[in-house]
Length: 480
Image (cartoon, rainbow, N blue to C red; front, side, top):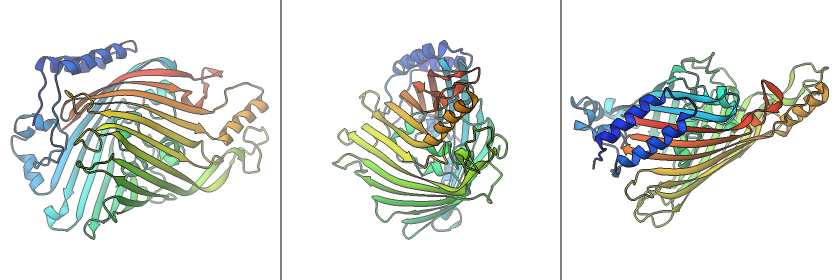
């Protein structure tokens, strides 16, 4: 079934979206309110079958609301019958921080992404073999976090150095009735590891800070992919085991690996493993759906002590050698809970009310962040007239390691200059995701960032920390 939108409301939304790029910081809030109102003028969004369209169209996609499924020449269907599917998505957002941080104002960010997938059994007759690749172009996507808030935690999960970049590029072979698979090529860890299904609606939900801040170049996660091999075993429909070995440093996204084509393979590796348990995932299941995950990682490279040099003297001491003590390797563990707490009769596993949480820890002597915790609640399809809308609230907390904080104390003691002590950073997000038609969503949001950067000194006033700040925004996503 297709859903429709009032043409007048659509013109309003397009006009607002065009104008948003020019807004200053006072206007994102007003734009958010205006756009949210336009959503309800647009009329109800009607639910649809979420199974993949036989024409090879991604689900959901605006193509299903267009004549001939957006494929008047039949090109999409022609490729799909031969096992080749492709698609495009564009994510744009306007964000503005009226208070806090190191800079106030508004900004526009955008990400265009395309993918190609191939079932090579259909295409060339190779049983169980598939191919996937995606690439994206990011523009003006480095401002909110780096230039406005100087936060450790992700502000927007499309943040990246503006670039045109190849991401994943891999082959996957399935064996033993699809219970075992091997994926090899350029891959990302955050495609399968350390992720919460229910957290995905939030723009701050990303590769967790405990890995992003501690691993070389942030680890093999958006916007960076790296060569690796992933093994997957599904002994039953409820249990899954994952293991992967990645090149341990994908390269700095701004300088070393700006376009994702370096294919680095000589860095000390990163090993990750995860066990997953799913329950009540069927639509006719009587109980509440949930997924439990337990994982760990180990990086085989060298990591610097957060406080002492190679002679055991504080790095803040004028007599320090200036070379940090090195540790061989670092490890971490994590757990994830996705739990549905209310499920309407006949509802999907992601319908109703759901909660999620991720928790992780790693040694404090060689890592800037030694503890991570996030969580939230998501309400899905709670308005009968808008079954595909979602509303949620989430938080993210990261703890600065005791060793790094001890270095701050040493710096004050040796310099005699007072400065803030790093302790933690925390963010809160409220978000409403409204589906206009399948494949087109608009998302007003609010964030509040506490202790940006972990309570670091302000560059213009080192005796004072960067102030906590508020952020308003609107994201729109279109999939074709």
